[in-house]
Length: 538
Image (cartoon, rainbow, N blue to C red):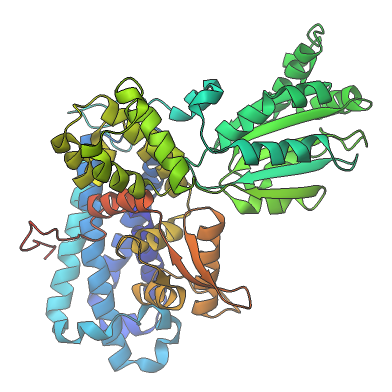
């Protein structure tokens, strides 16, 4: 997320350096500002790569410290820019029309304005800080892709809990019966033309579990001649996906491998698949699709042969399904969280599977209900919490300890690391400007229904919203919010009669993760009851 702050600053600096006013107001620091812009652009490139790697593996402690230092300098630079732009507005208001988006939050800084020579001194200090940080990164090898600091290495790769969902017994699964039956009906019934079924929901909601139970169901296996299960994820090679489809189709029909398949190019693979499927019924499930344009590489290979071909996609992004509508009939199934009763049943199965006959003892019932409530029907979180507590003594002390420190435990306890990683993937996949917007929602209280109008104005005031030709800042910010909703990161609380979203909220577990990221990135700090003061940046 730090590169998001750097990106905003770089845009400010570029705009600033293009202004005529710079030469007349602060001519002596123009060169220093240009140097800082160049340094920040270099740092931003590394931070963008580091953010992407952080989604798959833990960042080393050395890099974490360095990133924190970058954020602190970025914060000081942001304050300076607001002071400087306000000073320019006072001296040359007619030249700053393009800075209107950055001036929303400047009014509060009037009392902080310094004389000209003090401003020059401050910018020189910031420049020196940026140069020191860059030198430190080179000294410890942070600029080398995949490396951590010399004083520590990255942690081992985490174990993806989604793999477990591929091997769950029916008795281990709760609350999918009605969804499974409805989706199986969509697969085996209906019109003979090709149909795409998209199962949409936030990370950890059980999309993979549901899809795998459908794929393995006897009714599906009997109905289709060819079937394939393809795990897609964030990075994929379309040729490898096509090869896997062909191999699984032929295996399902107990046919010999296709000669030369491993050396075929994409066009040849598409042609082979089309010829193979021309007279066959087929079903393919693409699990965990992220890219909106994924369908472009698939639509021609899985042809519409009027034989009832079916394609199922699981995704966190509603726009993936919308993209498919360009060339195929699409059903969208929005997977819902577990009901309170289902959530409680799943928790007890995990927490007390080998004790108390699978039932919660009365002394732990209130705390257990509170822990389940925090999970808000998210199966991944319920399973993880229950699994962790199954290893603990069945005492009020142990249960209370987890209840009071869920956010902290998500970031450090190996039983809960998977939850943190799975939900963080959605955050890491965001463009930098949306990361800031999502983090900002974490400042609202747990279970708070947020006014969308108020939230949008706050994003604008903070400088998170980019100016876009032909649109107001409010319209651009509204698009940001809709994208976060479509990515299953923000939940809709209230929609008015016209269909416009008026209130929204964060899932409690996602909010806990955002709170920790906010603190790690110096984005914001929450004072707990035990903290009487906060030593912020100076």
